Length: 157
Image (cartoon, rainbow, N blue to C red; front, side):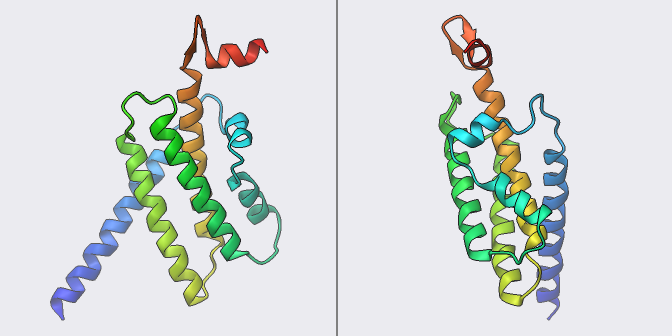
């Protein structure tokens, strides 16, 4: 019985520290918050999900939102690894947030099964995806096309 209590408390502390670290990472300021070209070019759905959750009191469409957020997550992780990334690896912060997103996804399934409100977890998941989109936007801005960076090239069009 004592070993089970220790396991539960250890898991709770691990999740608490993961949450605290991730909240600190997510507070990082960006020059150009939420680069709309990244969202539009990759047809990401998380801004629309966030808007639907914040502005409307309609019931949460759990199945649709879960699939859309997972697709956005997979697309952004792929792009972070392969777009404008010489190492083809995620940074430590990005790996931590990827674990956090998967933990939130698991918690979302449990909360839905138990009938608890999913809105707060879905909003946290959209915050992680927004961070990934901002990181991707910053990386793409540094890519050079001849003598111009990507942001200079886009502004010249």
